[in-house]
Amino acid sequence: MKFYLSLVICVLFMACGNDPSKHHLALNEPLGFDSVFEANSSKLKITSQADPSGQKQLILYFFSSMCDGCEAMAPILSQINAEQKNAIVYGIMTDSMGFDKDLALLAFKKINFTTTSAPKSAKYFSQIIGGVAGTPTIVVFDANGNKQKTFIGVIEKEKILSELTKNHKL
Image (cartoon, rainbow, N blue to C red; front, side, top):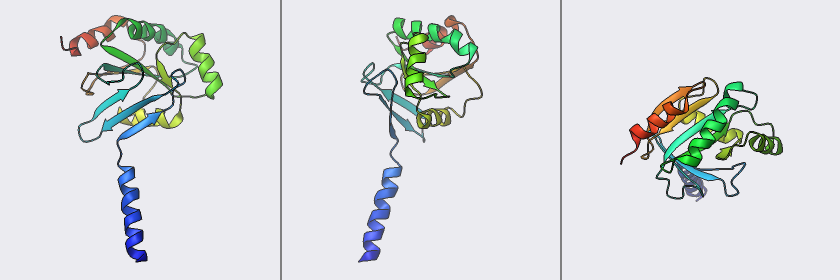
């Protein structure tokens, strides 16, 4: 009997570990956001208060607190997030200084897009894209969750908009 009980418990734990959905705490969105990554198809979907259906193109923005290039990209991505109805930006802070300091940094830099600084979330998203070689790193996904383009370093707003336009189904 103990053997069967142990077997059932083991199977339950194994099944729980295969759940592709994750919840992420956000600095500036009270309910956080959820992601689903399908490893077999490499598709990423994120749902949040800003995009409850998860049907928009995604821009993952990996940044760090003391990065000059990141400071230059933050207002550009805030503009894109405010202007583009078919896309949404999610910030991934890779060097959390603690919740209060991270939140103050977002306010200081006027970042208006949903951002997480949770180390587990930063590692999770970094693994999904194959690693972050440096910051800023911007990764564009189409509305189906397929990774389309990775930009490393400071880039022009027009390059990001061009990638969004190329992937947007009119």
